[in-house]
Length: 235
Image 1 (tube, rainbow, N blue to C red):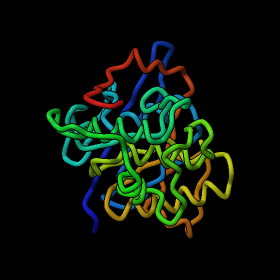
Image 2: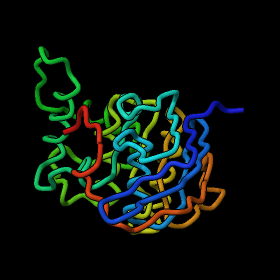
Image 3: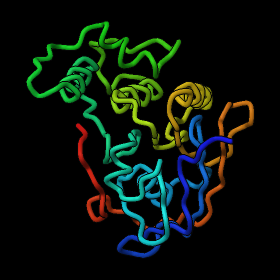
Image 4: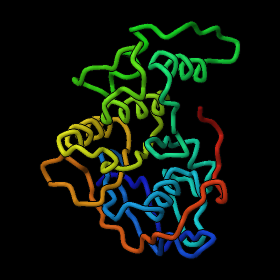
């Protein structure tokens, strides 16, 4: 039996205008792609942020890879694909974003030059797999929707944390691209516990590890600046 990555019991969160989610119970094992099924909105976003240590629970108990405090969870997780947390400037080139990430990851005393093609392959290759990599000189705003999200995942996953939380599958509109996205998340699940969300259940042949229907996701507005987020890094 797989070890437990996440155990949640009656966790809740609320915003300035009322409940956002909960109570929610979850049991997510380590490894693979794990999908939370529920309607898009502030409740689903807040739950994902909580599981990645970017928000405290209002009540209930949460254990993520042996950690219960947001700072501890934060250190063991990465979160990408959520507007307001890992948004990137679109009017920049891929090379600029990649260079910035390489410099961010390097020790402070290390001089890091502009990103080269081998850096692109090293950082983006594990996420894109057999899909074509974006060109270093391409502008982010001109990338196809799937490529733009995969780039964000690659930049946010350079340290390969044990837990990777990806905003949602349905932020990619094209059905074929959604299938490709799921394939890539399944591949990442071979070395990390990957959690994402979807408004609709995924078919069994998609290759997910677990799929959990999450009740009690409300639509009351969530203000990210208002919550107890624990940011220790990021671009």
